[in-house]
Image 1 (cartoon, helix red, strand yellow):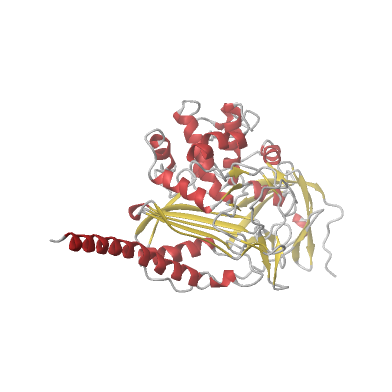
Image 2 (cartoon, rainbow, N blue to C red):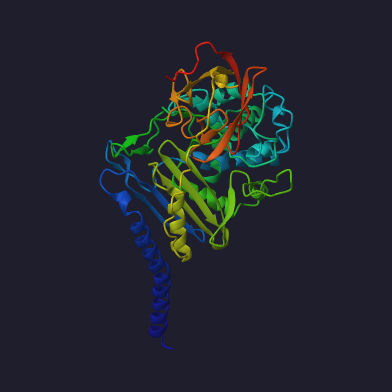
Length: 483
């Protein structure tokens, strides 16, 4: 074979190899762009999409606007609040400390959080990380205490409420119930064990070693950090986007800001950890075990499941108008990250549509919205009317009977059977003496009216605020207002 022929064969092989890489990538770009056309219209927020396959970033792109006010576009370097996706980083921090012998995930949390009440059953760190602790959720407690949706809330606020709690939702380890409280407590434990504030400790021990130079924990929502997206909610009445006002000052359960490139470094680290951190990463994938021996799908800050017969792990996040979702398909060495700055983005759905493209899976049809259950109609009486104080929530509710319906009032808000948009926002709407309606999950709350002790005990099923006690304070002014 002549030298010229050898050269031609060599050049042809290079060309064919390049075609193998470029053609699929172009095909992927076209299909993902088609999915996200509506994000790229004028005056519309959007997000950043990243796809890594076989250790190579094959797609990263920004869509829509990071700031509607200043017409600044999103890019693949824009920073987003990833909300509850942050939990896996807090869990990783706890796993680091266990590997260093500074704690055990089986430790009683009161070993470190001594001010907490001594409940009937021990709560371990692992319970908190697996969402099986039985503790009440920060957001639900504050809403029931009359806090507005945009009131600033911090780790200190949670601790103040938790030291007042008299009971748990259920025995620790008995069941799974998603709860931000445990992860906020984990950030407090990290600070107390290390003698260092959670925010700098995470930077020094997690982000910097992994080269995540653009990632940080945000505890001061009013500080100015360049290149951050603003989040927005769609207002259905006025048909326009409204800026979501930040109120979140808590850490541990959320409020990490990052971008596509840093998240890919993290996901690749989970998939292929170095020898030094292999033991730590293995802890992350230990799924929770219930008291009855059942294994749940939640590990340490990671949800482990299947999607169209493929193994998958990841997590979603939601705060303000930010929506985030990460998914890894380990057998395919595929990572997908969707970070967005508007509440109707559907980040999880979008991530799975992208997975369908990469894995060549058939697309799903549109799912019908579940039919909302009708509110029950039952007789009520004045026996339950009155003003009730909860020492656990440091707040008072007034219950009145009006035209046969039981109405709840709060000094800051009002709710009734027809409108749960204020106080409990679809979590709890009083409808009758013996039944409560929880709109978003269509379950019931049964109050136990202890006439002897003048106390109402609300036992809520499948909700983050069970068995909260309200003590009758006054009955004089709360009679039936019916004509």
